[in-house]
Image (tube, rainbow, N blue to C red; front, side, top):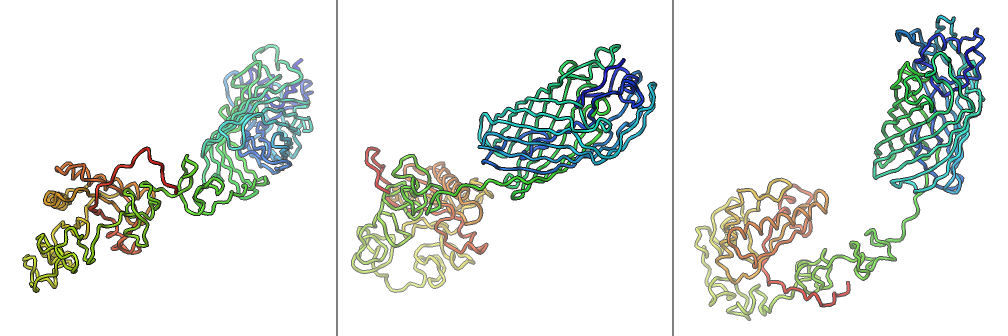
Length: 592
């Protein structure tokens, strides 16, 4: 006599004998005195998880509930095969619809208790004729086996890269053997679970051992067709998070195999489910589509499965941020400059303070000379710069170079007239063929130009403590590569430096417009200024006379709201100054 089938979560198809299977299932058979058979292998995770069958191990808060439902549709979960030639005998169950109702509660951020009750809403199939007789297909609705569970978190906080928990699930025989929704006896499955998050990547792994009180062979004539007994349960999931981590998308793997006949097609139903879960405030919505790897070979191996669920799982409010008056990301209690934003600094007396490279007490962001110690002024153009040498007549020509230091005058190349009032008006002082009234540079010869601001100006000239250029240095887009079109312009700068050895120090300054990321703009302006400096050094300018710095969108010279203004703000300037004195490393830094 064939022993009764007692195992609900174990494979039944792909047996060595179709006759033996029919004998076990046929209601007219004497051997059909079975305690139960389960035809649905989908076993949802505890409520509060972000996976369908795997666990995310979220134990946050005390008395935090979770409850919801999952609708589960499976196509052809039970198909009978002829063990001799492998031909299909028919779909015993062709369509299967379940509703899984469950709830859980987290306690003390360490323990989780839960339950899950499967409800078969309906199924359809075909009566299958075998050598042992007709095998009738169940129909209608039925209750499944109630699952009770408890888990304990052993290691890892929420969202940590590695979290570990152990627990156990108990299945009570509350289902119907006539509908293949019960095992007919109590089953216990201890299990181990691992989960983790690394930025937007999430994963989960589980393994369990389900203990069955008894185990027998389906047919003694085929000792390898072990149908009842202890079973190993396995699962894994990987996914990516999107939309501020509210959406989790990725595949899930689940498999079961008999401990005494492991990893055989007829005893190892295995499924892959591609799913997504989206959280909206306190609700989580899930949708998944999958199929079995062992379709038709084992019980509960559908050709495809569709699942959809919704559950209530209260969100955890974020703790209030500590006070940060200057919004620099450093709490006031650790911020040495709580009213002025600045970066983190390991030195407590500088932490959160604006950068001040030259230690002159003027933050770099408002320091017109951030690499040269200076004094604080109300003029943004001179704030933080060294005070200028004396100029008694305020004509812009230093007394040391002014031939008329007490009378305002004009700059000339002649030391005997430099800084003196001009001689009688000459309609073309620089003799470049362009009248003074339309010559933008009436004292320095230059070519004609349709632009009134450049007409009569050379490509480069010394003016007001700078080497002024009439054209912009051109770079490749979003790059520090200098275009060949700028060689003539930069050669003119080299000529100026060669002609003026008294210019002992020149700083190349790079600027951008305000579009785009401020950090990126600052980096690009530094790279462009450094590229121009390297070009000058390559063309025989002493590197000791040069320095470079980038200021991003700081100190615009035009309106960034217009394309023309932004174009003007994307520039390179050449500032003449005194070579900075190297700071004494032993000197005590100034207080911020």
